[in-house]
Length: 399
Image 1: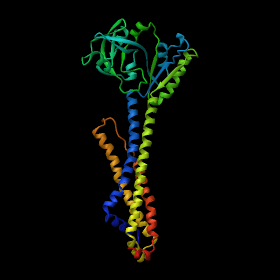
Image 2: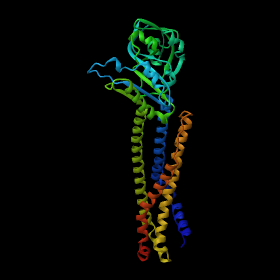
Image 3: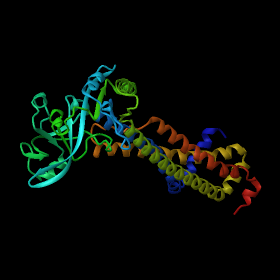
Image 4: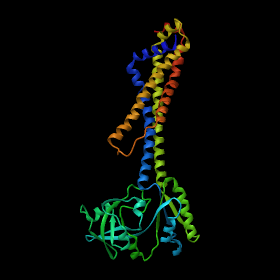
């Protein structure tokens, strides 16, 4: 008997028990679909985090002076406007801006609200890509004329003004009254790793001097040419500040890689959990294939005896049952892969924004198919070997 006839006999045997074959392949379908979905979820989560970081500014570097409450720090440690201008001369730096934060209370409508007043210099919006929801942002005239204007967050606007339009309304902070000219928010969440929060109020840095009496910059933001230059800029910025200030001064230079690291850890943990689930599903499906094939061998003992009596070799009987296992697992793998591809595509079309693509890895498809087929062959070997080992005389006597 040639291989073509062996395949035909195996497929005919499966056709005779369609429901059993379909139920047996159910575990393989779930396992192979899980493998595709695991890789898709991992890739999508990574791409989502990268897109969010890029929307904030993947080329963002910021530095702040490390405060030591246990000992006084001289003013020579503080960053200045000269430091900000010097940072612009670092290779691959295209913009620099300074900020200073001050806890305050806002008085509006007779009520007080704790806020964080943030004085910003020119270039801050370009670096941080602050999104203006209403009104406008600070312009050069506001900076030069020390205009008493501010921008507030949507959360703060709702707490102070309710559903009313805040543009043009006034709030009092300390001894000064500010006119609200805009409502802003961060383009993406930064997990409180930046200087912007839901209770932040942006004012011109020139006005901040009225409250502090100083021109020091507490936080220095720098924008690099592109994300690849961020490590170099981060290193050069630290060296620049150490060269311009006393050696005892300590500065913390940060990037958004911290957020990316957290997201990668979450994605890795989720991927491991899903891989374990997929492995369990494939293991159960393999055991199911083995059990069903053992039952099939028992049911078809006389058929095996007849085939051997008319000249079928041992390997031909083994190949027949291995092919049946392969078809069950391979067919289940194909169906599972199609399901694993269809689910992300459907989610992309129905729920996700158009700018976020759900990548389906071709490697995951290959791995799912190979692993699923290997599972069928591995767990199908024992029943196939048992069938091939049957003696013709004993098989023919089997009732």
